[in-house]
Image (cartoon, rainbow, N blue to C red; front, side):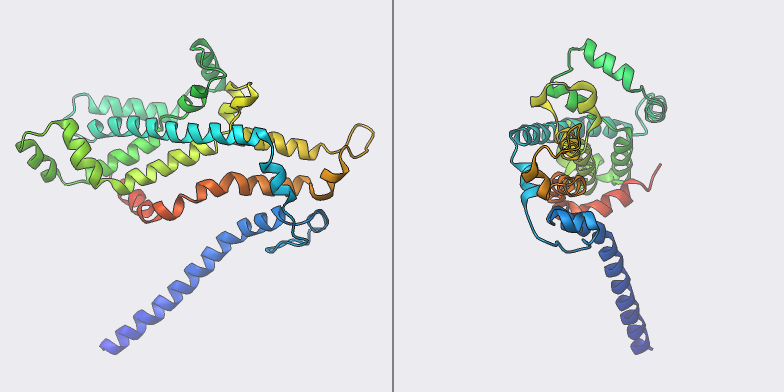
Length: 295
């Protein structure tokens, strides 16, 4: 009987690993295709000959995206916005989620209803723009930060995780005379690493990929975020011909097509944020599953 059970488990594991590897490969194929296009020459890209390996390998398209001075300015702005914005967003999320996770909080249901209402019904672009303009935040880096410093969904994920923690640990700390702030920083947060890493990743990706805030609040070229710069770059690559149909820059047109530039911008914009996933992957699934159990 034990031998049969072991054989069944081994067969199940083999099938499980096979299908998981297959699905993982399928999810990687689109990104491999984009990378191949970014490093392929103009001819194969236009002819649709590029699949998952570069043809007529060249790096001119990627260098075209990276070498401009505007890229360094946009990259610097986006890095600052992502780091500062994520730090502020995590502070606000944790300080809102912790008291709301306590049933003893007076008016808790009212606050929860308010947050749910905010999540479902929020102001549109025009009221937000008027608010930022009245506060004189347009054309400042704070407009890019404050436009995404709080997510009600992320707050509920953290709140649900806090509710799943054992009450006995906090009660023991209170018996020892610990304050609520001390319990939060020294007891609750160290036990909440999975959900904190997950929500930090959510905020970081949101700030990194934020495009609309730059369009709405930024007109200064030196403050454009990376996504807005890459969008302008794609438009520039698509505008290689003048009004008479002649090529404006033959050297640029040899290896720059709209499709190849789009692929290069995707690679450039996603690669830095992808570097975070290996470090946060072990916390990601645990944080999502535990943080979404309770309501």
